[in-house]
Length: 204
Image (tube, rainbow, N blue to C red):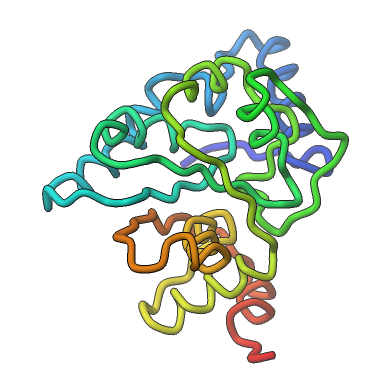
C-alpha cells in the first residue's frame, strides 16, 4: 500500500525512538501505541464481543505491552469482570511500573514475545491503567510456546507469542484459575516461516 519500512535498533523501544526522531525531522505525526486514545478504543471492540453473551468472567487475561489493549478492554469490562494484565517475564517493565505506581524501565528485554517486550513504558498509558487492572502476571517463554502450540493444535490458528500471553498465564497459574470462567484474546500472527517450524512444528 505504498508504505516505507525501515529497520532500526535491536528492540521495540529503540525502533520507536528512531521513529519519533524521524517524525520530528519530517514534521510528520508520530502515533504511539499506549498514548493515543483511539488505539485503545479500537481494542475495546474486543470487550464488546466478550460482553454479548452477558456472562461474567472470573478474570480476563490480557497481554500487556504498551497498555492500549488492556486499557480498551478494561474500560468496557472492569465493572463486569476482573482485568489481569500479562507481561513476559523477560520484559517486566510495565508490571513493575504498575505495581509501584511510577514508570520503571529496564536496560534490556529477553523474551520471544516482542509484541509486549516493553522496556520503556509510556507514562500516559500507566495513568490510563490506574484503577483498570486488578493484577499483573508474568509468564515465561516456555509457557508462551506451549500456549501457541495448543492454539495451533486445537484451533488451527497461528498466533505470535505476545498474542498467546493470556493463555500462557492460564497455563502457568492454573491452580489460581482452577474452575473459573476466564477469557483471553488470541491475537497477532506475525511469525516467520522459521519460527513456525521451531515453535509450532517441533514436538520436543
